[in-house]
Image (cartoon, rainbow, N blue to C red; front, side):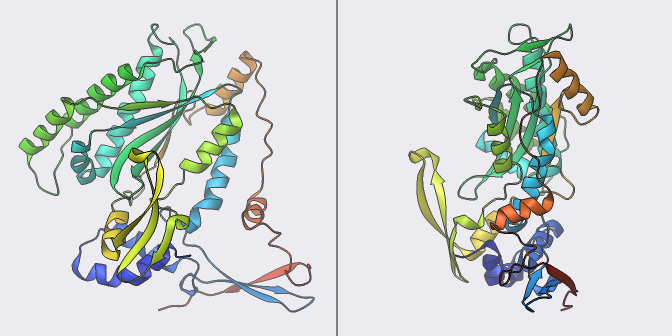
Length: 370
């Protein structure tokens, strides 16, 4: 089975010879190519009993590398277990009209921040309205920029507690169905994001063109926007499963890549417009790399944000008060250590020799300087 690393090894030099890339894109590409190779060094695991040796090379730990996200994802989810409340959760997706894509892609730092803020302000304002919930809610937002075929499709996934704190400090439970009509969310989100974009100094494809920027925003305003509310989660365990699937998702996973060569790449994708059918797409290797690099995030940009009573500042105290207020118990989910997570990932105890079952001892292996 081919991997993303194979795609970049096969086509990166050719791609770089006639295309300009940003520093962050090149950094991500080289990290993916070097991941778990001698270029990053590693260690030799030795069994003192039978003499068995196993070389393990270091991971690149780049957030765009699919090899490095599984354990990091599980560790992040373990840290979120203390935040869960014993109540239902909703899943809402904020998307933007396709005409805005060129503007967002050309101004990623500013536009992604505006996208987060507009979606969060929409939920906070609408849920505070007595006509809907009349309470302050808590939720986690995650930025995704890719579609199944690696197209540019910026959108925000949110996981929302089904209730909030009202003006008297009491817990107010939401209805079984989502408490805010999606049409209301769509209209408010459209207003907040277009207004935010109007007040930013934006370019289009690197060109300072205020008229074109204004025309794009005006065109987006005239369209109906889509906010999609999925069915509520059944329990806290489902929330953990969802967070694990989405928070550290890369543009494409290795499991979807079928074949990679210098000429083209074959990969699986799900066509949501055709009954969610799984299909196979073939792209020229350079086109595949171009599409993947569109989803490399700006340096230091956080793709996961927490809002309302789940905001990081003072969150532990607020969660504790809410649990006491509603007689909620923490989810009965066992936390695993980093080593336990790694063993679960590979399906065996990685500290034991595969030949005799005795303990392995690691010796450092320096990186190879090229």
